[in-house]
Amino acid sequence: MSTEPSVPVSYYIYYRVRATAEREDAHATVRAMQTALAQRTGVQGRLLERCGEDVTWMEIYENVRDTVAFEIALREETAIKDLEALIEPGSARHIERFTECA
Image 1 (cartoon, rainbow, N blue to C red):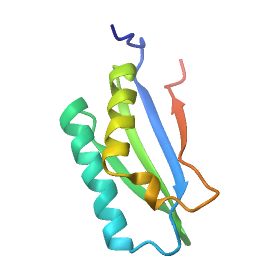
Image 2: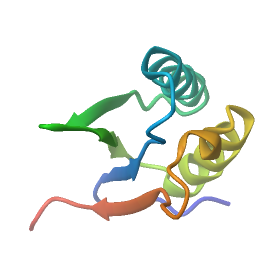
Image 3: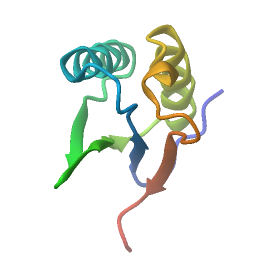
């Protein structure tokens, strides 16, 4: 049983990509994961990179209503696409959750 928040949640996930990663392949991998996630959850993500530092990326997922189902799907799709292989050694994917101010 999922618990749905009274207000939508936005997810901000940031990480450093391996310096040796092939950029186009890495972008394609993350976007393929986002497409699969959107098919499962109806939540379309965006992929951004930090200005002036293209090895720091951020995925944004907004208006998530069913956070339990979303987080399960996110974990599973991330593992299926092996996103950990893109992460700089010694770094990690950081997940932040935000809601609108009342």
